[in-house]
Image (cartoon, rainbow, N blue to C red):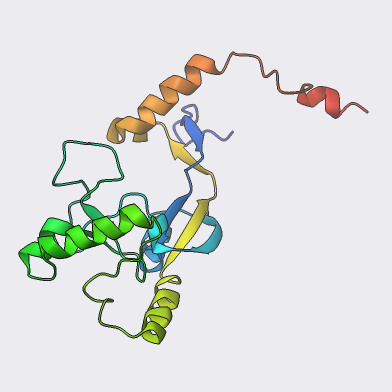
Length: 190
């Protein structure tokens, strides 16, 4: 460690080795994550349906509108079997794409056959060949990204409350013994 001109002791910064959860994101967003300092460890193609927090394409709200159920899946959100985009039935009805009678027919068919096929307003008028082409093109729009771990400075916990909570949980358990196998030093002594 090198001292500065004033002979002051070197500054030290506490950092945390941070592992970020894998994400399913649209491919156009990946360069933004990279500019923010994230480094992909792996990048695998994924389906749009894998995005857990899909929003309605019309109103952009990610929750249900018809029920008080706060947990997905929401009964009034429909996922297109072609492009995997999500829509509230009430939003489609509001703009004249579908009627309540059409919804009842769909729900009755679904009670008989749980694999009942539904297409959104953009995909419904397409031929079967066009639907297949669209389904394949949309399957390449998103990717499942695993991130490289990164070193994050201690002061980030002030700006990011969830990070601070993770630090508290980690520090509460860091003295717990690791009982999963022999200690590392024992494996290197042979």
